[in-house]
Length: 97
Image (tube, rainbow, N blue to C red; front, side, top):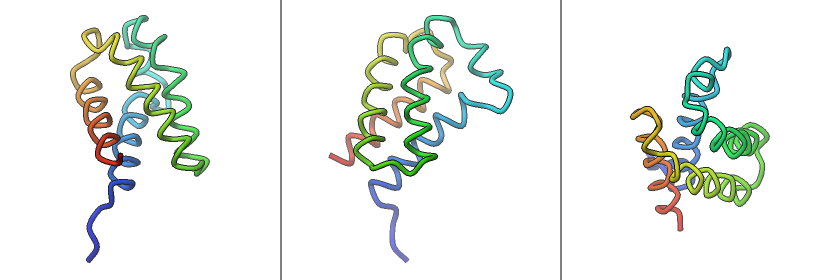
């Protein structure tokens, strides 16, 4: 049985962040501090689109890099579960390169 590839782990980590924040009713996103919501909403939407539309991996990689970069500035204001998933995503992205 083949193991999980770096690409699969990267996509799964990105999906976990998207699934946590973008709920059907946007309750999680709306409950975030304004500074966090305004920093991550657009880059996270790009990550979502890259995953959902099956865009090239390079597009997902760019979106994730932007998300991780902007999230770094507001990490201390995030709920711990979101901060942990973003750190996991950063690590998964580094594992690919």
